[in-house]
Length: 426
Ligand code: HEM
Image (cartoon, rainbow, N blue to C red; front, side):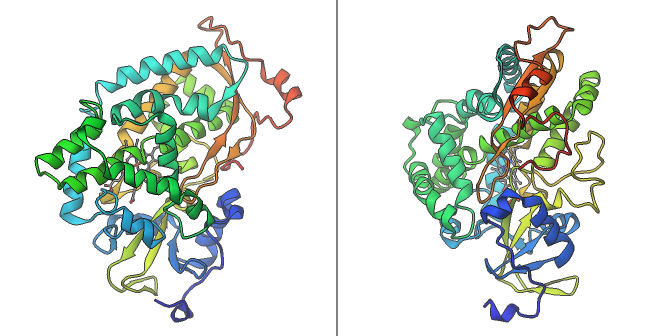
């Protein structure tokens, strides 16, 4: 569909992927929801965008109309390269691939992983309590994904390379902008790596091996199996790292909520959900509209692409009262892990990781101080690149708490946030 042919539809001239938008996404999402309507045409990208909770959720539940099979990126090159993955599939192919991933990621399959996560989390918190301060992304949030999850995936690349592949994999899902082009080389290496995988290069018993075995026994084709290893490598690290960093920041910036959680550990699952809603590590993916579809008087033509903005839907004030507030008492679902047929298949794992961190923190950490975070710039991910934080140990457990107190630290670091409206921090 040409840009001219879109003259009579609701239009917004924003660059959804510009540095300015990424620096202040909440404001752009608000414009998309309030000024524009159900679906809004973005001439800059020749894409539709949906940002209201009701509409994004409705589109996600209608995978017959909003199709993933031609890829979920905003550029054709990445969509072509993602053929064979679970996220870029529809119908029976999708069901078959998802079932395979589920064999590694179901609650039952992960039951043996939970105690490992808990042991690692406890050791981490004990160590960080002794530190004056630490980086809340690389030294706190990344620990479980790197120390536990990367090994479960079981590929023969070091963790830094896996992180690089994952992050590039999300960047190249954007439009053909400078950020996509910059990540293209790493994205292509990632694709080549997956294509050249052999059983001898993966860890026996790991998730990657189980997928390659399914290629050998013809549950899926060998090419599909190699593409599907991307389903594990791509989203398993950064997403949870960003969610856990948001968790840390939100608990640090909201001492009253932290106290509530300390006194009521049953709120652990609600706290993880709320951190994912507020952080929305995955901003959005695209779909192709299968046939002409009218919503609220606006016609989306068959073949056009639409960005479904989970991050905007999660800040929709018609769905979430005071959406910028970190609250452990929200009802209903948020769209941070998606919804419907393609809802995140790694959701349970990422929740277990966040739960393990909180369960380890509750008895040990009385206070968390967080400084102003440095934002991550990525076409598809959102969150923090780095975040200085301090734990102060709990008097209840006699934990040393080597970290300096909030008041002392505030003097040295004027950017320290002890309490603020926890909007997605810039
Ligand atoms: C807090 C952490 C995570 C967040 C916020 C997140 C977010 C999402 C979202 C929004 C989707 C929906 C995709 C769509 O609508 O097209 C998704 C799907 C997916 N996620 Fe996650 N994810 C997380 C963790 C993980 C982990 C740990 C893994 C793997 C171990 C994973 C693997 C996948 C896969 C394979 C899909 C595609 C599912 C399908 O198409 O059926 N994710 N994720």
